[in-house]
Image (tube, rainbow, N blue to C red; front, side, top):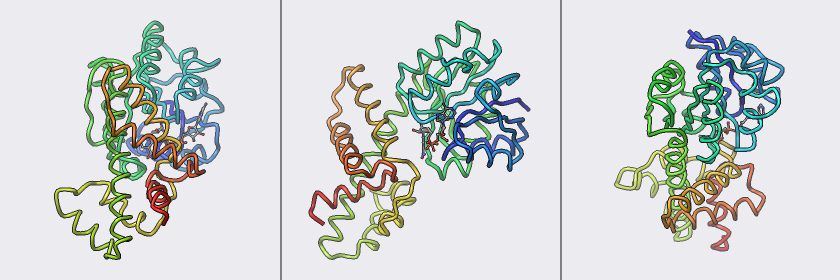
Length: 291
Ligand code: NAD
């Protein structure tokens, strides 16, 4: 079992850290907000007062932070992982950030003898709570193998997809698919309701055909009931669509649907819906239709 420092105990990080404790690891956490720390201590982990305290003596440092600036701060900042982790430490960054950020972190880490993996996840809060996340990993094969005990505790599908930053490109592809699916589920619901048909029965029959999807399965009830507590916040999906459109530009490809979905998500944010679940795209489509 490993000694693990876990930074970022939010919607995703808190249940993931709990799974690591349950798997027998010695987990010390840090978060700038107290809620996740209290939950970790209750689950049998320990709380540190800062990043350095969490990674001191750790064999593995785990990050699960919202955006690029948080990862940069926690990794490169004073008392951060780069400064505080011992050479040889395995750093697993589960956060969704720009590929360039993951590459910079991996290169700076390697110069100090740290073994860094970008390992963004899919599966949402439900997947984190159930310990069945899909994990897309960029980094050296030997380091991915060394991370197996952590991946096994929090995930079900784990794939190494290339070197540093590769995990973030796959996550960008994942997020454009998720955003596009939500946008079209929203349009399907708006159409059925406007036409006066039974939208719940409609969704049920659709979910049995070729348009079946996990998003339909997991989110149809809450969307039909207009319950939009996160889950995954619009603000974070807005960040992810920015990553996807920038990745498309640097890869030299045109992704027109991604651009459209990014604008719908931007509209949700502009309407003050940023802290709600991304399924709130339903409200944006309703607004566009004057409903
Ligand atoms: P969150 O905002 O709930 O949690 C992030 C946590 O990081 C917060 O508790 C925050 O206080 C903490 N934090 C921020 N700055 C910090 C710092 N400098 N030091 C220590 N802690 C700090 O976000 P989340 O929903 O858990 O998402 C985390 C990451 O996972 C994001 O990159 C997101 O895109 C990705 N993700 C989220 C989901 C989801 O469904 N929520 C699914 C897959 C991937």
